[in-house]
Image (cartoon, rainbow, N blue to C red; front, side, top):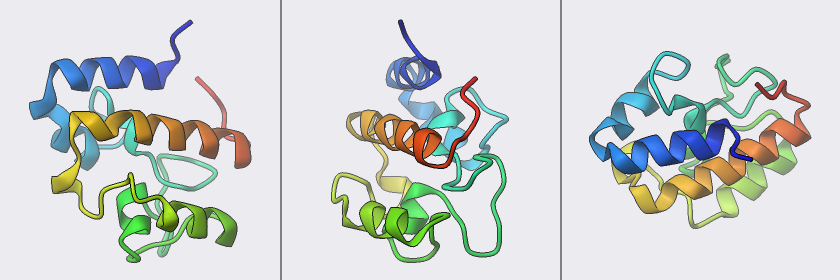
Amino acid sequence: MQDKYDVAVEFLTANPDEINRAWMNVGDAEGSCLFGFANSDPLCATDNIGCLTAIRSGFDEAKTADLTARIRADKRLPLDSSDITVASLPVFAEWQRILDKELNRAIT
């Protein structure tokens, strides 16, 4: 059974011109669930908790130091939103599932 991340990957793969829009509009654009913040609430950014690309680039952090270190070490994640491609979408889905589990986020 597909989850929301599978659906998002499928949509953005079919509509790659929508990737940047989804990244910029978390919670408001189709497929944007892939780009949620590494926080207990994926729609809530705080002063230092950001998205996967901002964490990977060293600009922001995740909810925990362990997650921050693991995200920064994952070379499959792009350093900038302009580098997100269809090929990297499954990596974002994988990380969102990890964040859901490790941060006890509600899965909808």
